[in-house]
Image (cartoon, rainbow, N blue to C red):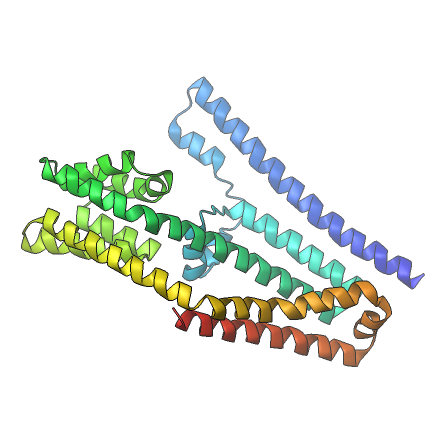
Length: 308
């Protein structure tokens, strides 16, 4: 009887989360349909924007820390308020269901593991996009320099170089180009982009543009020196990464080995794992293992980051 009640409560929590997610999705879909119909019948743009804005839900995105928003921006993930609210509601219901079925320590460990894996995926996506943008910067700077040589202004050169660059460059530079076209300063716009992206090449480019606009001189010569320095830095970074490849491989093995061993033990000996779920001492050991794994991952990440 107690087991049936437990399973029923867990299913009820999951159903509540799924229902909340469905209601949010339907409200978002309805708002988009109303907005498109409004455009077809010729409603003012202000009314269309009001329809596409779901004001019933709190702006949970504004509560996120700045570094989280920056990481999401670098990863190319657009997180709206209603989508974040749906994720939080479904996550809360899932956590309550896991707490009812498996207990509080196990539920905490599962939620923490899911959070860490999600953070790792977002971090990987952000680093992959930043590496692609960094590789495309040399070609972009060289196109800007060529357009400046033939007599174009800096704003025109920036916009023209984006058109012939890879899509990743246009994705990050398009807001800057629009900001300049709407009357913002070139140095201010480029500096704002460099702060948002936090890329070494863009910071150097921002400093070069700001220095040239303030003190004058030949920006083409500055860009030529900048391109040469970036190429030298890229060559040094490649050598350092090759030299530290063994350290990074060892860190990955040490970080994944405990989770792989735990998964194998769970498959081969379910009774042994059940002791950690049923006994209070097992709960304490699970919390200790999770905390140790997190601290070890943080320390190994710090060691790897200092090695290159």
